[in-house]
Length: 337
Image 1 (cartoon, rainbow, N blue to C red):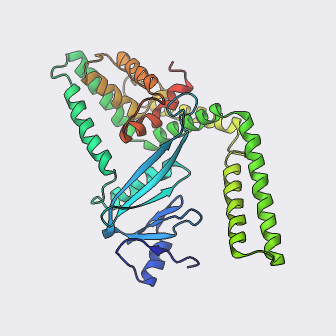
Image 2 (cartoon, helix red, strand yellow):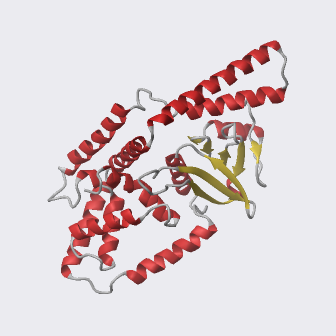
Image 3 (cartoon, rainbow, N blue to C red):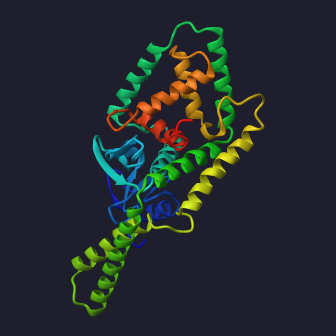
């Protein structure tokens, strides 16, 4: 290995086992999930550290929201982190570029190691409180119409659960479209300037290295700055997949594929294809259980009003945040129609 992972926590792996485990680990962004350990990144180097599973107590997501979260101005203005808690309270926080990679890694860990908790201690307490509050809000008696509506929504959610790739793509395409619509054209010029600065830093670092006029610290700083600037700028600049036509076509294609799948549903599907997501259906079920609606159309309107009410001034728990991020862009793009 070029960079042997440094150990965090009490557990240790012998060099041969460590090399094989890191090589075969499942990679999620800068981190990885092996059979023997988790592999975590440093600021510059992917999978720079490892922690054996017996030392891990919790692994959870932390999201830093910037101003404008949940609003029409910046629903995706967030920075995702993976936090690993080990050795009785120590924490290692890993920054990710894409939040979905954090979710995928947590899902992988949960399936392979169900003994590891996937929420923070504070979130665990809030989730228990939320479940109690949801149970308390449920009406003890529902009308026959409301019960039929719930069964209809549950059947529809089960149908969508058979094709999770379609609902995932519908959500991701909608979020990408929303992010593009909310970004200002000036940002692309800023991205271009950042990329150019990164290239200049890289060239200057190469010249300094060839001439031998710098120190290790200078090389490290120059190449580090070049990497940060270039990766940050290139992710915003238009490419074959990152341009208006491609982004809009992806969103339209996701809705068309969902509409095609819904044609196979027996009877009339309770949602239009543009909103066909299990989270929307389950939120509608909760609305009916709480007595706020008895019919499917009324439940959908209530869900829309709930999403509209979520803005940067509203504090939500992690579960609510995940639900809102998954579906709100679909409604924003359609202006809640």
